[in-house]
Amino acid sequence: MTTDTTADSGISRLNAFDGLFLRAEHLVRIQDYARDLVLASGTAGGPGVIEGFRVTPGKTQEPGKQPENWLDISPGLAVDPAGRPLRSREDIRLPLTDEFMPTLADNGFWFIEIYAGTWQYGYADVSGSLCDEPCAGGTSRLLYQGEGVRAQLSAAALPEFDGQQPERRRNWLARRQFAAEETDGERDLLATGNAPLVKEMWLPPVPAPSSGTQPVVRIGVLIPGRSKMSDEVDTWIARRDRGAAPPERAWRWRLGMRPWDVYVAQILQFQDQLADRYPQPSQPAQRQVRLDYADLIREAAAKAVGRAQTKVMTRQLLAQLADDLTAAVQSVSGPAGKLFDLGFADLPPAGFLPYPNGSPAGVTTWLAEMLPATLSITACTCRPSDVAQAIEEAQHRDRIPLTASGGAKTEVRVLIPVDDQGRVPSGWVAFVRPDRTVCPTPEERLDEVTAFEVNFLDQQTYEADLKSLESGDLPDRYAKAPEDQVRTISLRYPLRGWRLPDDAGLGGNYGRLRQRLRESKDLRIFVLARAESELPVGVLRATLLVDPLALAPWLGKIEPVEGRNVARQSIVLLFGPEKLGIVAKP
Image (cartoon, rainbow, N blue to C red; front, side, top):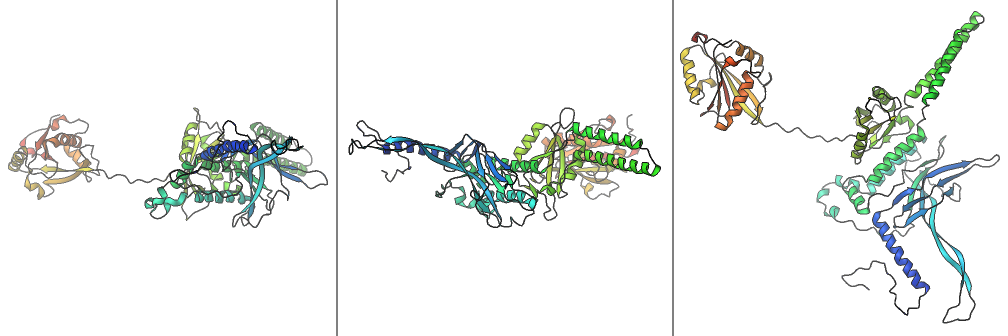
């Protein structure tokens, strides 16, 4: 029963009381109540694989018979979209036969899925109804219902899939599936129009209605072979381990983020495919044995005997054999080929690449052979723990295309983990797509200061200027005097700060002014400011201008004066006439 202020949850339990005649329907209601609570709790945590359910292809070939192919699925635990736990305690073998493989349409492939399976077992006698047939004979029925996990293949298709080159189909499918997942999650909503002002974007999401179909958990993809490529199983194109709860996942998508389980799946998909396609390098001991064989062949070539022509041919053939063997051994110290040639058209935002050489010095050459020229690579050494931080920070960044896009190169940062001896002990380097945050440098707030370099030819003008400056007045004639008498220099200092002016700041006059100060026989220095509070910083600026290293004490003290007619702070250097007889102190 519900009222206007109460909504039905769809969950009900038995209201037991003394004297109730307990029947099967009552026991079923008790079981349904417990089941519905479990399903609600499971739904709240979200679907996904918790552990296990590894998919491994198998094949057997008996003489005179068609080969048999199958997929082995290991035990595991998962939760389906309806919240139901899927637990398997034994391997599942899924035959790859017509009976279990749906027919593919054009551009088709299969998803590998698991879902809840039930079966009944264990017979028990059915007694007659106590009230209606107390003495009638009974029959038997199945007493128990087992629950477990079933596996299946479901057909799917993507346009243009068949048109891809055989070795590129796997990465192409991964790229398209990851993009479709982001579209379904509405990750691109913020990129549309006036999204921040669309009210519906910021309201709690409405639960999706039940589709009415069997809830499944995808644990992989089976890609049909083409040309010389056999069928391939890719786990992480489809599998998502259980991660964030539905509301967190939904809001991450809505805010333009990428949920952690999706990000990890993209990295793992790349690493899994790379491990399948990338040849394993020889072990160091094996390489050394082959090099020793090459040396023995060269030694034998040097000892070749016989006719002159035969001896020359024998030596040439043995020498060529030794060189070929050496080249084959040395080739394993370089990459097996560019990632693009191994079937990759793009990479996840972060990942790991093999690097067995051990020295950071060879990384640049290695990367040039492994990665295309469409990437702008910056290699950095770091501690191994720094790699984990960098990979975590790349979670929400775009994937890395390996093909040119409008001529612009994609920036990639390669992290080289080194030990205390500067070596690369791990046999790998990491790559991440760095951020492209560009912030304009804030315009520095500056104080405009005017410096006057004043020269005198007569005693009268000199004394008049001194009197004016000592009283806080900047002589009016400085604005109109010729340059050989008053040179005006504009200086810029940090707001309410100081620093040593450079030659550019002095308009190219710094060298000349420094020489003039060293030769000065009479110099008076004044600092004029609009307020007394500005005078201390003015004295510091004047000091750095005339004697930054305090090597010329004879230049005299700097005289601060509160100016009465100055628009901005001013530094006045008065070079008196030599006929005054004031001689600089040594």
